[in-house]
Image (cartoon, rainbow, N blue to C red; front, side, top):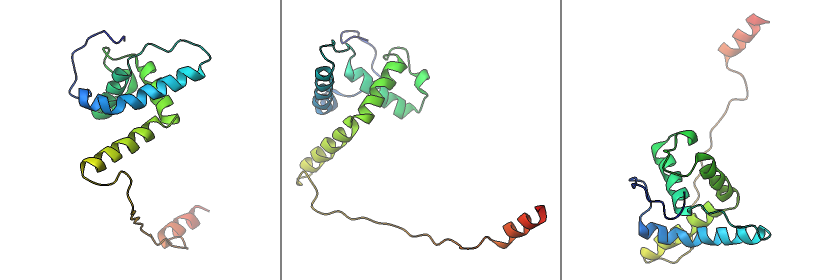
Length: 139
């Protein structure tokens, strides 16, 4: 799908304000990837449409191959998803969005305190009697 092909919006599509927040990360990723491509022309896929498709998949809970036909092909969407996952794009977006939310709440970009919680579960060192009895009768 090209940048100029219009389609009806889904409720899950990015708003212009949301797009403005994530676009710099996606654009930087594309430029870096193109620079590593040894002069190969960058692919002409609308990154906003790829992201919209990923949000749709997540929200609708559908399979990749059931992605509506007005999004880019599911193989293309998955290819971008895998590259963004493997190259840390989602991590960068998460860090940027957390910082933005903290700024809007009047806090420092990075937290100065972290609280970790854990839970211990006791386990048995011996097999319960019913399991042992069942095993012995089969032998």
